[in-house]
Image 1 (cartoon, rainbow, N blue to C red):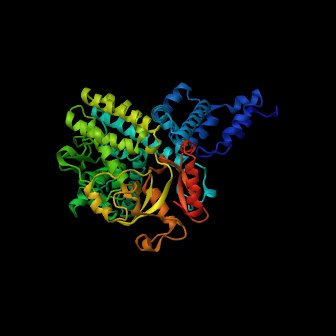
Image 2 (image 1 turned 135 degrees about the vertical axis):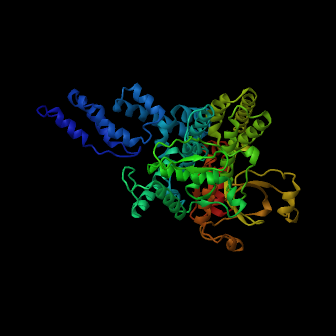
Image 3 (image 1 turned 180 degrees about the vertical axis):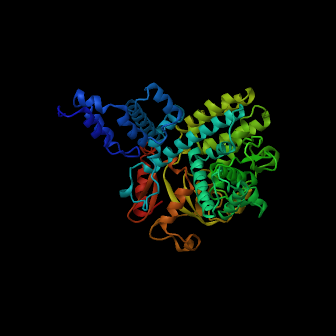
Length: 569
């Protein structure tokens, strides 16, 4: 440090260090840390809180989460101390993520640590682990890491579990009488899909901004103090603009009206703009309020309308969130839904129905059974931090005891399944199912034929060469659903990238890259069991299981080699 320069000059120099957004680059923070280790004079400048502030805010987008607020209090608002502590939490989260990926041991204890304790403080570092979009090629030379496929899955699953926990917390608060506007209340359902409140708010902001531009192009005055301000005309024009953007009542067919996705606001804002009156009212009210118009929904839970006071100070009753009553009205199950979409919808609905204290034992038992089946299959990270430690304490005595018993049983089953190899997927290859023709993935070892006559007749089992006396496999289809198929009814795709067997190419009509990508996107749970796809020069691809499974079953390495090199299954 040059002694004759004023300290303010060094302070100004350090303030010019570039601010790098994201959690993967902290060179400027490292420079500040190195400066703090040179001498006392420079250290006194390099540790100043306001110099660290922009780097802290750029690195962590969720700097106003409850955990961050508590951290700020503990550090007296010192951004350097907060930066160091958040950096340590990020490292702790990555170490826990590595343990889950490599060994899948203590997954439920780690889920409590990540989802409940660290929570949104480690959101950014976990999101940074996700490879998005998927690589253009699945060649191993282009992988960001050897375990990128599993890392994608678990990082996404942990952050989704954080969002679901927040949704349940909001639902419990709503049940206890906390005021919540309609936009927030309907987000609770979308939270079970891993959609954050910020994502919904951002989409509403974008709609309001576009609508504002449209209104200004039509010469509407949006300043309520102007004499030409016309609230009625603006409101009507907002409705007309919404129709041009595709927001219309779902009245074409009963299937469209009762589509379960109409109850999830993130779907209404994207793929299901032709939706229910309630959902359209929510969109209208959200846009109007962002334009300075005090609109409000009225008529809940019956026929919903939007109320706009034409005079300032006109009183109206505030109306809050209401949920679709599946017990009384039923839920329309759309068979065209992807399996994971259906499960996410049912999971959200049944958790919401379970929370009210007045729910009876019989409905509660049905809700809990469905919830446990979905969580066991798709959302293992939710078991301890959400079901055991959040929902169960919020329930009444009988329902609480029932849920706790189911959680304990599922924990016991998962611990025992970790010791029984046949319950866990090992080597996975891509195959074609002959009847009906579809692309599927073998995920489990052979088992015995389950006894159900409908399936035997539907898939023509008795007409196959070996009939019922052959191995049967559990497979995943492109839509995420699972099936049980006979070995004679599947054909391995041994040269995926060169061509598909001509007998089936007319039915598929896609390149090998497209087939593999479709399977990966349609089966989001694959990363739960497999580290990555592995490709051979001949265009054959299989999925590699976790290291502990390969160490336990070294013969699987030989099977992988035989398949990739020679196409032998």
